[in-house]
Length: 128
Image (cartoon, rainbow, N blue to C red; front, side):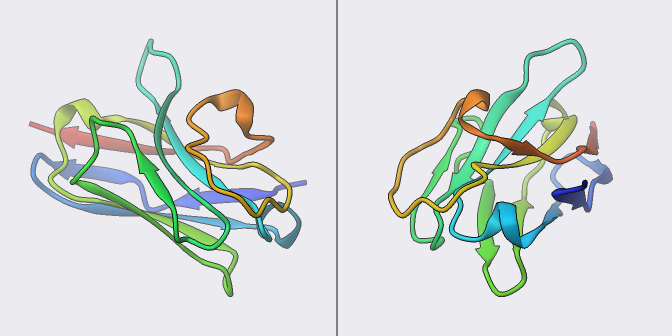
């Protein structure tokens, strides 16, 4: 049973932009904090950004702060990751994740084990 589906990845030149979209099922999205993670070839999966249930609280990894923006549209069960000023080191598979249950508080949720549902990932490749 598919809960999260990401799309929007692709090949882009350094300095370019991409917007990733994650469409979630109602069960895993409603009231839940959401996050984006990424995993480069041969690397551990790492935190990119997170957003609380209302969209009023967001957190970013230092490496993407000022370049990436996470947002959500609760009416569409969708979370976005706008990526600007892309660098070759941003190349990775990007994963959308959900805490999977309603939670009306704020936290950074920066570790993979804090999320219960994951998408299949979308490849982002930034050429130099």
